[in-house]
Image 1 (cartoon, one colour):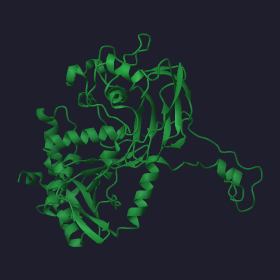
Image 2: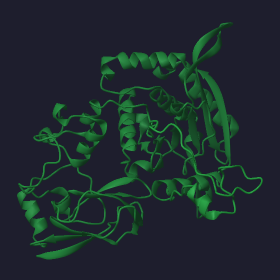
Image 3: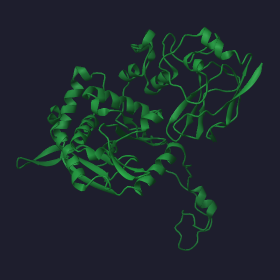
Image 4: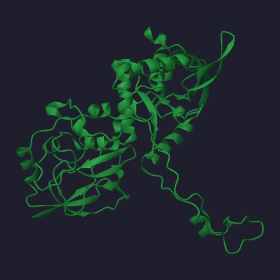
Length: 446
């Protein structure tokens, strides 16, 4: 019988600390290698932390909501033969391919093999369905019955794409749900016993710190929100921002979206106007490559680096803060593949599981503020990029067509740019190109 501490591992990407968000185990629980023991939040994303040991959970050393540095002991394990556990696991369990491994702890064999679960271990989900814990969690979050999913993975394993095909998805990036009205229709806030002259009844005097604190709420700034705030401040006070925008008749875009939704080829893919906007941005970047460039400080001075590929970022508002994952080499994707990539990006962002690698290396970003009912905005450029496109809501408005006022689907396309890299005429042409595609998607044929 031996006890071993497990320290917070280095999850890569240069991160030095993380918050223990939720413990998935309790003292006395039996765990196997690679079982999820907790969720941690770094400055990049929410990550499930697998166990590198097999045995019994001894003690949880860090409380939920606590931020600790890499190398801090967070949990203890008790096992009969600590040294033999990894070897036994490799000898008694088949290999698992394609699993994600956190950098900085565990042996190679432990990362690719799993010890057989004890017979008395409680079953966590659908019996007889082969699926990894993250896929099972995704299915639970989306309300998908794994037993009804047709697996396409090796040895009959259910994959993420399999679950996505059966998911009933909400609006793109509508990650924050509107809370329901409570049962209490009205609430009275007790007023101070003595109300000084000139102070409205029911409002605490500014000189009373205790009452002022009781009437407010402090939200700690940490994790993703802290990293996002720092990045936005750095961008806003480093790059000279300028924004241009254009109103667009997007009626034909809406007609195309309707046709794609009805197409059997897109039966299992969610299609939205964002797909056409993404294709339009990629097309316009090819015609205006400076929009895809970046200002880079080097030892020999500043330089403008033009990227001849598009890692298309999609700004996603999540309960944990702003995430900007990107689709790598989006210029090489077909319309259908781009739609699938957007679907995967959306689902991963909604569940807060976007890996750090997906948030790095972006070249240009789209922020879809239209899903929140906004017509236009002046977005801040994502650090490391020189341009960002804001897509407003698409709604029916009066529009002049051939000298007549008709109801058309109208939207506003806005583009913010780093004026060190891009001149006004270049960004104006870029925004005009995006608008041209939304007005006539058939231009994408060439």
